[in-house]
Image: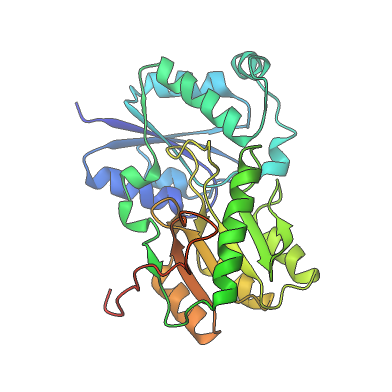
Length: 286
């Protein structure tokens, strides 16, 4: 029998891409989705599909059991403010009551444990689409200035500190001043708030939280993110190399180049006293 992927589909077209890649590797794909977050066409790329409401953990498990799932992948965002009004079923209620903290990471890790109790292997979307991970280095012809490198490193540390409290994943910095941090509203709204607070020349940093389960929720950016940075007059985007997804990378590079924005696949500097970070420059032919 072929392996069976249980696709827990959030928003965007990402579930389509993961389903196609899984099928190409010989998986049968069954999915669940949540209106209105999940694209209504996602069922078309699945062999079987069920619409659920947020909080129906027991029904999700029973559906996957009936489909003989072997692997599970969480793909695509869920609108977090709407998740505050979820109505949990008995299994989800029991899970929530067992948690000391109820941030994103804590809840996702607990759901993962429930999946693994059923004998299912939880895999990240990068298991099927590793080519979407952000490459390391300066991705644009436009290079960060020394001041921007300082802001990148500072913002990286701020994001790490906040991430320990399950807050993140985006920080906006300008000349050593934090303009905005991402909470429940998402990256796009964070950029809009930073713009209103004086975002011209700002540097945007996005990275994994220190305790984040990378099989469940990697940071993601794309052309829309870069367009948002241009709209606020921002100057640079640094995103974790190998630990984030970068969608529409080539289109993003072209747009960033046209608007004088530097894109960086960043890895952490050893210390604040280190010399200016100089990652591998991305080849123009890649």
